[in-house]
Length: 250
Length: 236
Image (tube, rainbow over all chains, first blue to last red; front, side):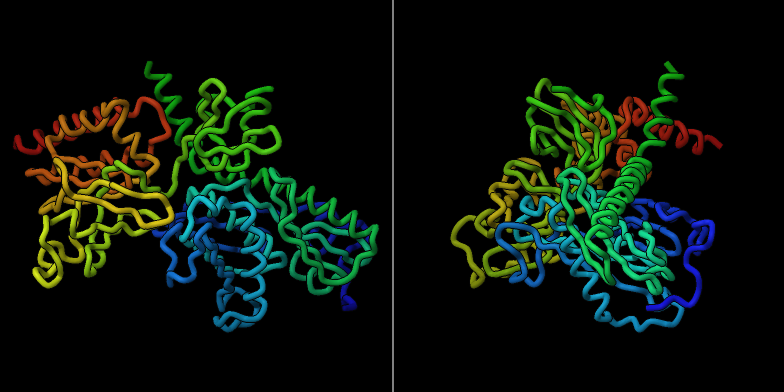
């Protein structure tokens, strides 16, 4: 699609004032919902996504259960008020696809063989949407799984790269996603050194693809650090405060 | 060959714990010569064994575990009991009544109805089949009064304490009857409702501060303070 306005200005800044290799500001939190076994919240750009994890629990209906591993069910859903125009709450084609690819991005990271015949439910609820909601959703989902205490090989970090006015850029926002020339979401599992999600919309040359993939992995590494920090943040302040108090007391 | 974390350091899933000739203990795994954590928890180093004490997690039944469960269904051969695990436990009628038995002789619901709380023990479990529990044994069976509160199953050892130091202290200070199920369900019963309330708040404290040191002393201080507050209230 030909863009109607300039997506990169003469100073090399993008529509939201970022450089080509800069991420949007991101905020992650875990353990906000009392009723879910694990939960998380992510804000990335305008994205606001809440994730709840239930399980492992008995597979219902029973025939869905797998005798050698837990099954993971994933629902990616966008609230009717999450977009500029009201979105029907019924699952759209896109949401069904994202549910499937996020599930497949998470599956290799989960030790599902520890809980045969059981089921893990992941609910990803988009409250406000921006570009890269599948990546944000994947990251938040892996945080919620970790918060639930489900054994994981690693967290899953995800980030999109794309091409805007011939320039490879990191972490596309909504406008760049819609009007840019290419969009490629990537999810990585750092400890395994594996990519568990790779999609591409638009066109890259072979050299551009290699460069974009390298950039996406760099973005994922920074986001991974933020994920780890978000998990630790849940327990660290309390631990440190009490330990300091004890040392002072003794 | 090196340990990459300190003892009791907070670690996240996928965080490398050690490199080289080590053994992966609980909640950790080995991959390409490195030991990684599987959960958010505190690292434990015991010689060559590296493990993680998780902060939160599901309960996995084990034979011999004391569990507090709730009857969710009654079938021909026994009861289905929710024990806060990924699997519903089965309490066969043979574990409750001696022979002869059967649905033709007695309605099972007359023995235990849906919703009833049972203190029981796991007698068989191997992941391929649902756990089997029994109520035969000292201290086991249906409970008649009291309350059941939840605690993250991974924090149950913290509530019990080393050789039961924490739980026996709470029992002593409160005078309540307390049954700590390994599945993170705690049954509390006592004559004085205020004491029961105090125990519930002590359990909440363990839940919130399980990963900190010196907890037993703090709980003890809390229970003693609770006692004093009550005597003060009675004076005027």
